[in-house]
Length: 209
Image (cartoon, rainbow, N blue to C red):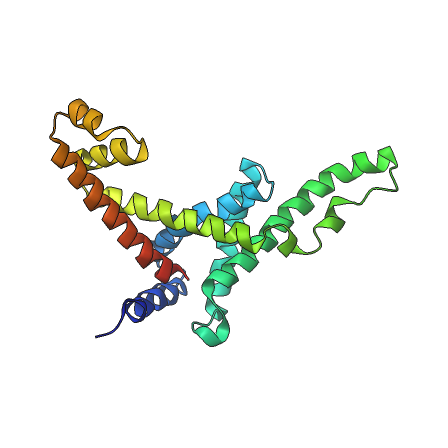
């Protein structure tokens, strides 16, 4: 019997293969829903504004779309995760360069010859997003996407019990009283939905790399 890691490979490769078709809107929507929070979060952590981070998301997705035809699947070619990081770093650097073009006239009028221009400080895109920040945002994104997907698969009532007891951290007894259910029902919702989120997160982590 194949292990979980082996089972995940066809799923990951199938999605990446489907993305080579620009007309496959469903696959591209799945890609966007899975990765946009990651790209946005990293851009904000790098120091960009909301509007700039949104533009990074758009430009990164466009670059992935343009380059997907040449992307090769397999260990010999590097991971998709690493490729996405490289593209995201470059698009973040682009935003800082755009910002720098707006402030350069002001800097010139100030005639501060001793300062280092922002564009010189971002010559290396990797300096904007360290590996630690990328990994932190990656894990957070996996958790967020897993939670959102599981929420769509359970009943609103079960989700409410989980949301109040786990996400809002209310005492189980208070949740049971507020929702008119037994303590056992609250505990069951916590356990079942929590387990499904962890399972989905593990699946996503394998699939997204």
